[in-house]
Image: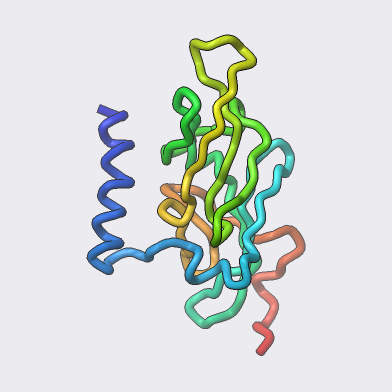
Amino acid sequence: MAAKMQLFIPFFLSILILLGIADAGWREDCNFGGNGQFHIIHEKPYLSTMCPDHNERQICTMLDLSHCIMNSHGHLIPTINGHFERSCENCHLTGDNGTILACACRMFGKPPAALQYTEIETDNLVENRDGLLGCFDSPPEVCPGFDLSAPPEY
């Protein structure tokens, strides 16, 4: 049942996006100039960028992608708390818009060194939640040193 629900959520979100009920992703709002970046911080995979909030204030935000993606036998798939970083390496953002996460991931059941190149489009998965990146039930985070209480600069 849980596996069916995990597949249903991305499908349902896709329908909402097509109907214009949900946001279409983070690229259009946040990734102007291709400023999205992928970092490993304290062994966690982070996507960071600047996103506007409801007042158009630009917020430096970051998202721990382990809350959003899983390695399923060498393929990256959207899943709540998937922790793909435990079995993938050499991850980076790629593609024309810099929104595709590409990694070499272990294929379970194969020899331990067997890795497969795989990609996932993060724009279908990550969204701008009033200036903060999010997916599923991920906790919102601002970049270290960014002060949300400071007045916006115009």
